[in-house]
Amino acid sequence: MWSSDLVQRALRVAAQAHQGQTVPGTNLPYLLHITQVAAEVMAVAGAPETDCTLAVLCALLHDTLEDTSLTEAELEAEFGPAVLAGVKALTKDDTLPKTERMADSLRRIQAQPPQVAWVKLADRITNLQVPPSHWSAEKIAAYRDEAQKILAALGGSHAGLADRLEAKIATYPPKA
Image 1: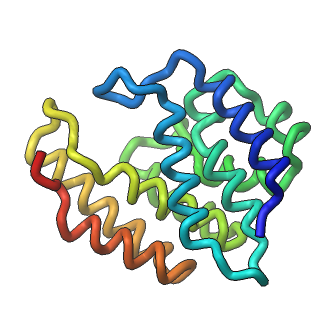
Image 2 (image 1 turned 180 degrees about the vertical axis):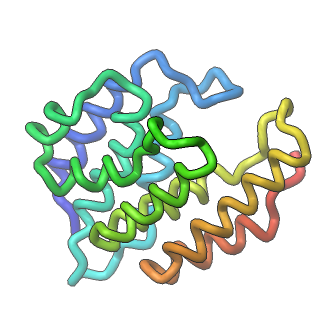
């Protein structure tokens, strides 16, 4: 199903890269978010004919290029070109206007193996928790709308994750 050695190595790299970072709005280590995304992927990645290693590695490393000092060259040297391509697709392009970033990312994810799309679905599932208290009703609605766009674009990659995301959208924001 996946390579335990590679998963452990990716977890160690992610932990080192995100050291000192916290989940926004909390004092919890950012590694919590990373492992939640990986757990979502691992929970649905049970088909023995599917190589889930790419999905789990990308889940553990999906925010490293965006939020840490880890470089593309380091990521590729450690995990290879497929993982680098997946993580890059999952990384927002900050050179684009903010309004274009999600559509661009979804296009790049769709050009990758389906396992990369699983990570984006799992990421949004884990992010649809109680929104930060400083978010306005408009921001919450926009975040829900963005989740629906992710579901529409990537839901076909995995029915189980699509169902989980759809259920999370239906109850977002949950009551605190």
